Amino acid sequence: MTRPPTLKGGRNIAMKVPPHAWDATVAFYRDVLGLRPLTDHAPEVGFEFGANQLWIDRAPGLSQAEIWLQVTTDDIDATAARLRDAVVVRCDDIEPLGDGARAFWILSPASIVHLVSPAEREW
Image (cartoon, rainbow, N blue to C red; front, side, top):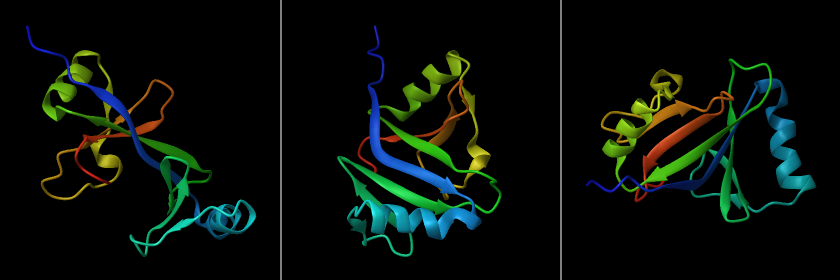
């Protein structure tokens, strides 16, 4: 019998923010809450958020903010099959991951976007 893949929450949280609210949102996390900025991925804007990383992404097509989460797995192919069998909606066109990326996008029943990626890969 094959062992099912292990899934767990990843450390990355992406907040997709429309342009009209982006500057104020970045200022809120930086100046009001005083979170430590992540400076090693410029020009991306991120903050230490406890054990997680909160990324503030400018999203021109949105009218309000969305939260996107990361799920990691020790077996990306078995996880893809498990999710397919559970009729989980894949949404790979939502944001390009680049050629050869061994990761993909899914939607929860509440339409929350999740990046499913190998555990050893940092995103």
